[in-house]
Length: 292
Image (cartoon, rainbow, N blue to C red):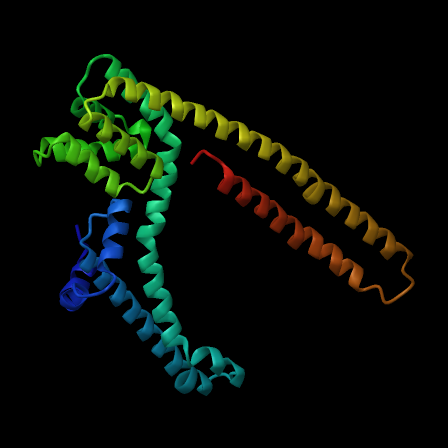
């Protein structure tokens, strides 16, 4: 579903965007991110954003050269930044727009990888009860607790129930569409098991146990890494700043004159070094955490 702005972009650039070399790339990215937008429409959207960025840059240049000098004196050195601003803003707006689907796909990948072991336990339990694969994915699609996995299951069941696609083709489409390598491997294994006449229930049970083992290993590694980070945090963020503050305070107390730099160093430690250190550790832990 396109917004009014995206519809306008598509009307302006749609025909040219359909011939763009970026169509296949953006199509894959949109599928993985579950963004229901046609690739040529999204490319048109990116081109329009780039055009708007260029217009904004031109306005900045006009203001700098013709309007602002009447009121304030501007440093000539800023010309090196202002003059290329139309190109820079256009490129920035275009590339940020083109990166959005890939960024959403990466977030979906992380969510799928985290929730997959628990979703596979659900699938294995349903298979043990003798429920057919199509009904298993239908029931999984009704469980939002499994995050992006339940959306993948909803699309699989949609292909089967609405588009009347056979289970093997639906699973193959899902494997090609998902951003998660783990979920892709699971679906490909299910396809192989079905086509070879294997025991699908046993495959689900084995895969669920394998994923839970892998999940426990990752959780253990994360806890060990968290312990190392905790020790580093105490050393770098707690002990080191205290040592520096005491050191510079003593140096300042014994200073006989001209010691104006020591208070500045103390301010830098308290208001720059400490916040940046805390933020750095928080971002590091967040990026390493197996939880979303």
